[in-house]
Length: 287
Length: 313
Image 1 (cartoon, rainbow over the protein chains, first blue to last red):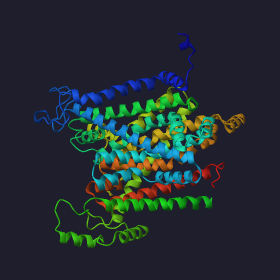
Image 2 (image 1 turned 180 degrees about the horizontal axis):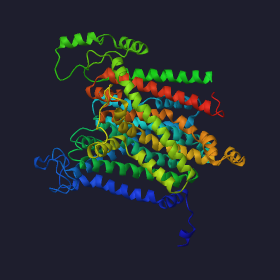
Image 3 (image 1 turned 45 degrees about the horizontal axis):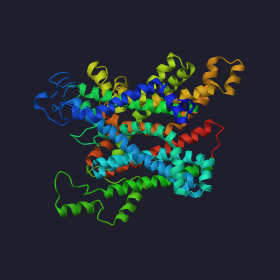
Image 4 (image 1 turned 180 degrees about the vertical axis):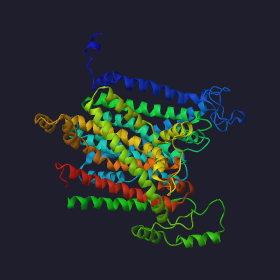
């Protein structure tokens, strides 16, 4: 018991403590956990498959005919479709963010650590790419190569890595002056190992914050494309494509617009509050 | 100043060049020919069509011709509307998009600055929390959610505003304005949210600065301190937000013009994208890129003019 009492508090313990005191962030984490459970388990447990067409249930209002949230123009159960759409949107958000994370961390850490001319060239490339209207290139990609799911992940991820690269580079520049890096270098550790084993793990704080703020951005981008008819294709669905179809039928069946919109907004808000909470917890100077 | 301008232009030129090149080669990398539509063309007809659009020449020659055309403002013909050029489609749609986008930017600036100033002056009180709550909602509710919900409320249920459409040129302004209300409001909401947060943060910082304390010490009335002294400093972050705001309004206009059936280039862009009218899609992307670059540059110049502490170099 003595040893526990003497145990020091790490920076991460402090951060966790601060995060748990932030009501908005804690509530958002609970909400998000529920949404994730719904997205993962929901489509399996739902009484109707998400793509089952029920001829007799067309435009069924919520709470009638065994459809908790009603049915759409083809009599498909909205609850089942909503959970499936949520699953797709969350998956796109996580996978595309992961793509951007990998590219951004490697690019930024390399530029920052090597420095000099390499840094100059690599960051100038980021500057130029930054000024391109990328969402339009994603649209162009979707138009020219068809609506491919994997391509969608990659394209959105490739758009989002630029900010990540800038953040990581900035952090690396300050980290590489520190004594422990000097020590590693003196001990004869190679460049790749220094970046991989010493620099990258210490970048975690700002990167985690940015990741939680990138996921809603990606979900938004995918929904935007799906709304325009360029994202996922029927009968597969996402929050954006549900909202898009709901908007077409809203006079007849407003629930088809309202429920997906609410889920979308709640999801985005949860991520934003968690991101803000994490930023305040990890870097309290910014408050 | 001159050196700064020329350096920025030197970055802008390769950027535009990359935009044009990427757009061109992505279009050419597309599987199948753009003329494969509902009807199968016989190989002979297809060859003739390809020759008509110069697509039978070597790729590099076509690329040169396209770049040359773009420099002269000629984006080639539309592949779907035989009698229209891309330039013509842009000419017809752009004024409409510019009007709606411009109005949205003005509304966003006015409302965003007001909300931000109120929130900063009433920091950590009810008005502040209300304004910032509105700002969070504005960021989290995408345009493709607000637009149909507003239509449902104000057009379908209350019937006070038209569902969609563009007023006829003959319609007097006294009734035509109703068509603009929802598109402009929807487009400006996310910008209002971001601008009000920027202004609030700027105001809170500036109100603590020495020159504001000096103004107070001189015995100036509070309104003069806030509006003539503090606001000038606090408004600067908004100036550098002009570029990203333009990009946001353009992206939003794709959705808004679609929902409200406005005859702008946003809608032309989406329609062309769905119909695989490659030349139109490329032309509009190039125009958007140029617009965003130009406004970013304008924002930097404006910033330097407003803030004498910034020396452009």
